[in-house]
Image (cartoon, one colour):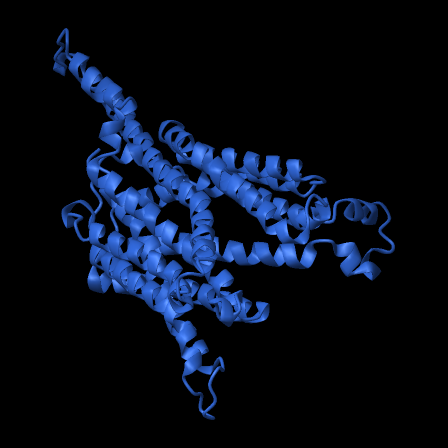
Amino acid sequence: MIRDFKITDELHIGYYASLITSAFAMAQFISGIPWGSLSDRIGRKPVVLMGLASTSLGVFLFGLSKSFAWALATKIFSGIFNGNISVLKSMIAELTEDHSAAKRTRAFSLLQVTFGLGSIVGAALGGYLSDPVRKHPNLFTQLGPIRDLLLEYPYFLPCFVATCISTFCWFLGFFFMKETLYLKKKLNVQEVEEQQRLLVPVESQEYHTFENSEGTENGTKRDVIQPITEKLTPQVLAICLIYAVVAFQMLYFDELLPTWSATPTEAGGLGFESREIGTILSYAGSVMLFVQVFVLHRLTAIFGLLNLFQMSLLSSALIFFAQGTCRLLYQIPDLSGQTDTKFWVWFGLIFCLTIKSLGQTIAITTAVILLNNAVTRLDTLGFINGFSQCCNAAMRTLSPAVAGLVWSSAITSYWIPLEIRAYMSWGVLGMIGLATFYVSSRLNPVHYNKPQKNP
């Protein structure tokens, strides 16, 4: 799409594409807390439906992009008016409040699986349905106006299909999704109690002039208006910040891996071709989905949430350090005795990516559960998940730029020996991983292993 806008040369297309991606993340950074707070007041379902509606409109308008400014504006619109990620996390937390840690983990894992499947389906739609007239001219020879529309807007078809899917989900949500907001449940119980009191004979009731004044002051008002310090408790802030740093690590790795793999070996990389890099990324994605569906909830039942979270952070940090050494495997002879082949490099990459995908998948999902477990007032879940989503969005904006800066700075520091500067980017990530593990080891299990059920 950026190439079709004809606003830059081939060398700078990636820069403009990253601007669109970063704009969406920055918009979510701005809107995460307001949408989460709104869901605490009016309910989860209305906010989710508003988010789906704005997604449908935003994707539809994105398909009509004829300029970079229009594409950027529609991405910002989609990010600002869609706070569904944090609200859906709050809904799952409310639905699984009384379930075991393993079942709770299974529910949150399924949410992550839907994100992964959505990424796969979205990439497929974009790849196969974009610019359809030029790719499949015989299919559109008799379609007249439709053919002209798709020639004018070559990226409209995948966006239109995505809009239809989102609209279908809106109708599913409208007719079948149930409200989960704890505060609404609480208010419903209070209404029933009030109706029961009205049915009690007048003679059996005792009247006091100030009977409800204290309850109104300390109850209803306190439930509706709370200082931010009561919402962002120390344990919530701690896990929010750790969650943000884990997201930073994951995105740093995902940004660095393709760049490092594509860089020639004499310049400090692996010298892989694009199809080989695609294979690497597909394998990592497959491992993540497998862990979410079949592994994570079983490990939670064995080790417990916090222990598993800490183990995943430690294993991730060690793999970050090991990842950069894969290029040294070129020096080991393969089965035929030849060096400088990719035989052992592939083994090293598969091992590192397996452990990394396992560790990072567990860390991201368990961090979300630990955050929801740390919430002491269930009617603030939306605000807190919105705050954590803001932290996550900030890292999605910052991490790719940091990874690119560290890599380019290290690899062009020619006064440093090649083997050291080729490894420096991974070493930095490993140090961040170890620091994150150390901070997580200071968390108090009392606040995180089980949901806090205070009203």
